[in-house]
Amino acid sequence: MQHLQAAKTLVWQYLQQLPGNTANAPTATDSRPTLERFFKPDAQCHVFHPINEVHGIEAMHAKFWQPLLQAFPNLERRCDLFFAGDFDGRFCGGAGTWVTAHGYLMGTMTQDWLGIPATGDTVWVRIGEFYRVEGGKIVDARILLDLVDVMRQAGIEVLPRSTGARIIVPGPQMHDGLLLGESDPVQSKLSMDSLDRMIGGLKSFNQKDLKSMGMHAFWHPEMMWYGPCGIGTSRQVEGFQKHHQKPFLHAFPDRVGGNHISRISEGHFIASTGWPSVHATHMGDYLGAPATNKPISMRVADWWRREGDILRENWVMIDLPELLLQMGVDLFARMSQGGLK
Image 1 (cartoon, one colour):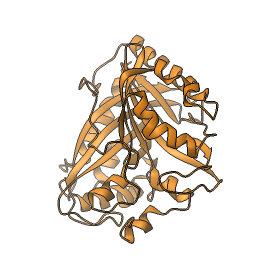
Image 2 (cartoon, one colour):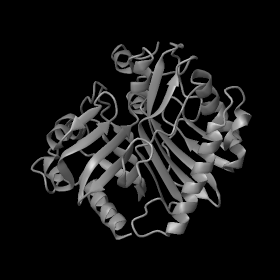
Image 3 (spheres, helix red, strand yellow):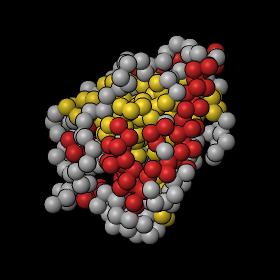
């Protein structure tokens, strides 16, 4: 377990340095000293659309961190989930030690960012991160931000209003999501087992009836599902099915998920991400986009909290701008035109 603690210490220190603490940088927007301290020089970084793939420290600074810190000069991090685990790479690679985090970046948006107009006010930017650590350095990063929600906060609606609740997504109910110390490996295995059972249920979908997946057996009666802006937050299996599963499976009935580059558990928490994680055919309208009958893929990240032998909470992020682009809808172009009319 010592290697997990070392990896967590490394990534936690990095998260405290960027954003907010610029003691090691000559200016508030110079992220390079911190990146050089924690990342391997040729580290791979896979991030949300429209940034997408960036390789190496200089590109990470120029394409991601510098513009973000210029737009939010007083940016700070609010981390609600933080834990680590080892993954064997059984699905599509990614074997090694991974550390994950979920929460918000928050600050005053004083300049435009990625074409999103500055609000001059406080903006909450939901963020989910996965970092693979090797030889005392971060060598691979997967980062998703909820840009649709940032656009919404800037007063521009680029998707139909979420049918689920639009909220600042909370951390875990028990406020116990920051696992900075060691965890019981027995509990970690129980958590992964609970996830595997639920994924088995998802795979039993008969492409007709939601009941074929038997979701009530895997989820707490008062489960919470925290989706991205455009889908929203829901409660109980019935809410989850109404606001997410039913419209999702209407659009993508042949979806195949679980193509994970990382799937880890620690204590009562589990996380996974894939790049892409899901493959499907776009057979029905989704988020206002009519069916194209074309193959699509989805960048997805999930975090779960187990309670007993079932799942209680699920935090979900999807790179919706990248997904909608495959469906013929450019959300950034729509934003530049003032959003939905």
